[in-house]
Structure formats: C-alpha cells, structure tokens
Figure 1 (spheres, chains in turn orange, cyan):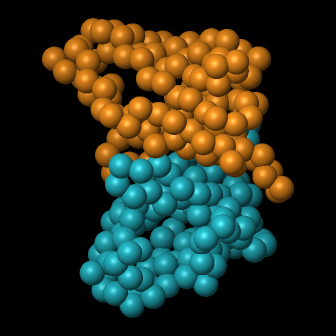
Figure 2: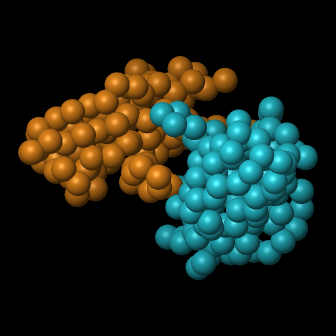
Figure 3: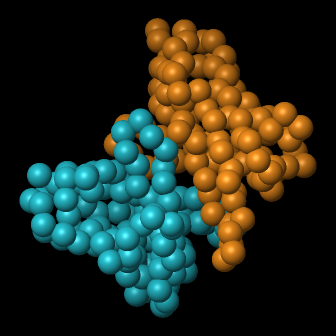
Length: 114
Length: 115
C-alpha cells in the first residue's frame, strides 16, 4: 500500500524566510498530489494540486514541485508570515475498486516566528 | 468551491450513549461524502465513503455497526457513533469532492470526548 512520509518534527522558521516542507511516497506515482493546510481543531483547507505531468505549480507565495522519479513533492512558502503557522498535509489519490480516494500524510507543523 | 457545514463542533458524552454528527453540503450536491477520523498528531484516516441513496463503503477495520452512516439526500450525510466508549474519543471530519472531483472540501470537524 502507499506510504506517505512527511517530517514529523515541527519546522520553526523566522518571518520573511522561505519554508520548505517535504512529502515522500514509497509506491506508485499518483495521477496528482495535493497540499492542504490544517489549523488546530479545524478541518483541512485545500491549497494546491499538482499533476504527474507538471513539475511545478505556483499560487501567490506558495510553490509546489513534483518529482515522480524521486517520488517526492516539495512545498514552499516564500516570505513566510506568522499567519502561515499551521500543519500542512500532503495527500495522494489512491485508486480503489470503486474509485479514487485520498490518502493523507501525517503532516508537518510549521511555526513562523517574529 | 463547495461549502461543507458540520455540526456539532464538539460533544461530550457518557460511555454507552450514541452521538450523531451531521455534515451538510451547502452549495453543491454531494453524491459522495467521506468521513475521516483524526487522533492527535496523527494523519486523517478514512473511515467510510457515504453514497447518497445507497449503503456506505467502510474501510478495513472500521465497524459498520458502530459507525452508522446515513446519506439520505444530496446535501446531508450523518455519522452516528453508537454505544460510544472512551477509545472512540477523536476528531471526526467529513468532506466532499468539489465539482472537479479532485480536491476535497472539509467540514470544520467534530471533537468527540467520551467520558
């Protein structure tokens, strides 16, 4: 089965710096990979989706890369702000007999300090 | 995108009681809804897929008789935790796929505490 690995340790960075989060998977390459943000006690919120034929995707201060050879996605937040502090989850579509479902990583907690 | 409303946000109940959690799709007809459970510091684990007008599909290891799912309309799915026990205490979140059927839109979650 697909195993998704994200840094379990929290990432602390200084405001204004670029935060880079990693998502590695072990099995087949999915058709697309997604990143979500989750705040404490809340449901995740969709951020970006990148397809297997795309190398990079950008949205405002966010950038996602997808390397199917390395089986890895990197998630970057440039000019980070304290409001970016949250847990970031990567998710991969997983084919099932009745259709795809999303499998989530454990998430990486990001803390942006002043 | 789809707006998903989930209630209640939190519930505390005594062991042995049943708890119902509602998930509504406010602006999108959701033929399918997903129910997840999340323990502290852990990933979202898919419990079941709720299908409108038919039986839910449960993931391996999830007790169908304990976690009853009803999806009677295109806008409402409910999860009932029957005879809840302290080990059922967790964060339960529902979601639905948007019109593009790729990304998920989540409810705000329900924190269940069973005493």
